[in-house]
Length: 211
View 1 (cartoon, rainbow, N blue to C red):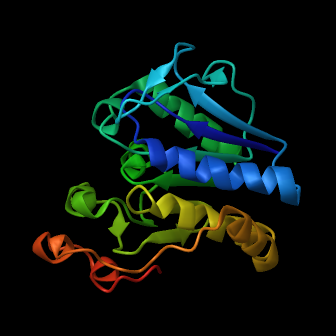
View 2 (cartoon, helix red, strand yellow):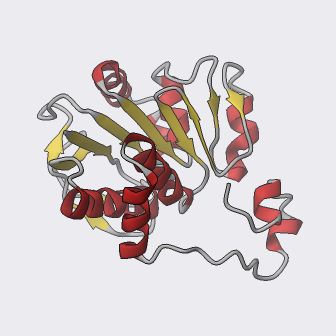
């Protein structure tokens, strides 16, 4: 199986590194996908939102057919929604993929590729209204959501929760649980300060819950 993760300049690091780590553990310890490719439009190293530089494994022109495609978000999505080559890549690879996933504002790239029309989806809490304004997406305020073969996650760290749930859905909860244990991924539900209240963040954040 081939799992592809698309990146681009100003991509948010944890949007893809968190899921990449979970998929890597799945592959190493639980007979997960044989390949997990980091894919970019060009072969040059990609500078991410917070300054991390990543060398892609493949360009979009070198990419084989994918069983699974994950599209992260970040500041770069505001530019990449108008990058027709990247949008075409998402659209074309999604035709044969079993599952397509997005994290954070990666949902805007899926929408531009025509994958969210009439579907439930979420995104970073600060961009929920912007996603609603597009008009063809049923926006839900959840940490992650699934509509058929399309999975979307809220902001940044939510991608880890989504990928664990995705792995559980195509294997079983025991496999996902062993991956979770190996990664020691047990998020604290403590809310620090009152920033979430001041910002009017979604209910699942205000409650400190992980749906």
